[in-house]
Image (tube, rainbow, N blue to C red):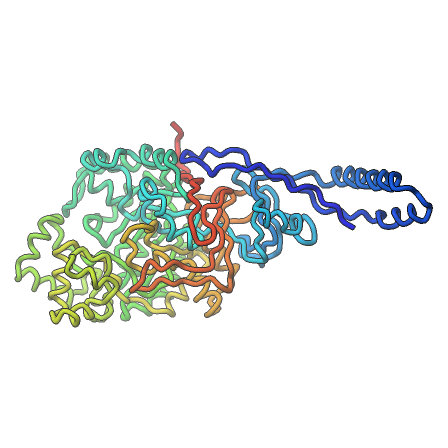
Length: 605
């Protein structure tokens, strides 16, 4: 027979916006087998011992057993427990069964407290923990391109697209960043410096963790504007001071987006000079490279060269080979990175699991048309001769990142969303060719109308599935959404916003067998954690931060499409951030335990 100690609980409220949390403790003892109880009571009956004596004997045996248990099995006090889990720990090692005990936001113990888990799972049914029922428990996933955390300041539902994918941490900033800000923007936003912005995120509370980069476009726009010219020595010094403030405030590195104006106008030495400031404190260089198609290999060489000059590790955002003419370059691109790593340079990348990329429709236009800034470009679009010049460049030009050429000059392969022009908004998720057919107009007219009236987000089909798989298998590659928080807004026009991580686990792991579950989870967690300096996360191990996701490997799947980009994924059961449940039963819980994960250059107040 077994005796069981009580499973005790003190309830608590969810964390407040400041992250404060009242005590929540569970006390559990493992079932203990009392071998002599049955024989002792039988002997008592045969000897005619009365009921009182039998009760006394029973009590004595229980007390002795409890005393022995207490000496070898101390009570575990903790905030949350996960029972009966299949643990995929993020290291790439095979899964194993265990119970996970969490205290103060960290993993206190990984163990098996009995043949059926903690109190046989009874505590879970009483609402005192989570019974995983043999589901997978993995480290929380890390989105290596989550764009911005600013929506968390005003929208409590902003993270639903990420949490429903199992994401617990995002890296933000891709050339542009939420800080620093110029005078006008600072007045509207309520912060100016990176320190002020990150402090505000922590004070307001977040449903997940955030690592922040400082954007090259951001500091260039503040100091120079959006025109095509190099900075003066004084301007470069001012830009460097903005980067230094951001790094000391906790940014993990500097980022670029080199296909978009005005960043496209920056020379390599300008970027290296700014990244060297990030390198002073051990930060990283994160880059949307200058080219992802015709000059892909040269762009990789430039990124590696900047890292070497600035003495920073290098991370390449959403590695791809755009355009069928360039599909043969993927193995060469990966070889470039392998060679750099073999030579001792820390270079890595991420990908998203779609062959349609996503960018502003303006990126289809040659950068020279933006040399005078955005306002001048808008004015030029009214000129028929300028439109003809833009079209000619798109149809024939090879001296820039020509996305129209990458699609095979096929408007049917250019899907658009987030359309600004009201007359066309009903066509969100359709190709420009389909819109032209539906309206009886020429596709080029549609293209210029979209540019001229509020813009649009383009999702051209430029990549191959075979290359996507090759990149996924590289040991230095992690994953991203390239969207970030999108819940409750119209920003999610690409299905990757709601589907990226479940799509990897369903299509590429379960259905195609591209990699094992353990390897995929390692890329989603430990590999990415290393790339943002979050060395206390990304793995399930005692003492590490309790960022965890519980999912059904058989049921997990993405549902988002270009026509329905906000359809939530399925299969994620629970998401835990810093020891607190933030997503359960398909809904956010409202808890805000997330925090800013500050970089190696952080200097306290």
